[in-house]
Amino acid sequence: MKLLSWNVRGLGKPRTRLALKKILHLHRPQICFCCETKMLARQVELVCRDFTFENCFAVDRTGMGGGLALLWRADVNVSITSYSPHHIDAIVRSESGLRWRCTGIYGHPEFSQKHNTWTLMKRLASLFSYPWCCFGDFNEIMHIHEKIGGNERNLNRVTEFREAVQSCNLQDLGCKGYPYTWSNKRYGDHFVEERLDRFLCSKDWGINFQESVGTNLVNWSSDHCPIMLDFHERSKNSRNAGKSFP
Image (cartoon, rainbow, N blue to C red):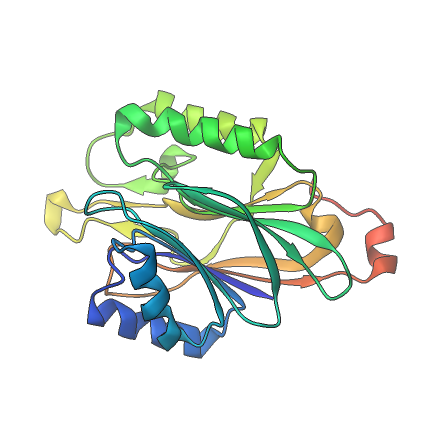
């Protein structure tokens, strides 16, 4: 199973659609989450017909920004459970009958509103007890070393994000590839890079899935890099062994 997440910064742009098509053709994910589509839901549904996904659930943009979309292929059983301008939550059922949660997050970009993202995550954490993969653009770093350039990050903001993750019993899966997922695309002393996009998984994720590897992909059509999670369901015998994240 492959899961792709990308802040596309406008799915209506031909260059972005072409870039996404190439990524989907190369990696062939079964589920794809896009944030900041900057489109109405009905527009996203029309555009997504070009991406060879049979299913699409979209959330309208807010004003001229925002907008979310979750795409999945016909051979994946997905049930949407809730959504907002900042998340899409779904239950995925595998062929073996195993259920797990798939939650795409678009964190509030405004400093004064970031606490609402952490509140949302905590509320979602209380709803189900399935193995959980929570991912997307959180618009915040978890550690000071996840940012280079620019002014120093407010330590309280970083700590609040990390505490929210811990409160939800989630853990960062880490990543392969280039360590930063966002750039302001400036030069010299004004250049800034941060790791804003990531995969977080519940501690029982490792009991049910193996070889869960997050990868930061390369792309030039957005200021965010796509991220992809490649994972495989464990056999029932292996799951019964009870391996989980430490």
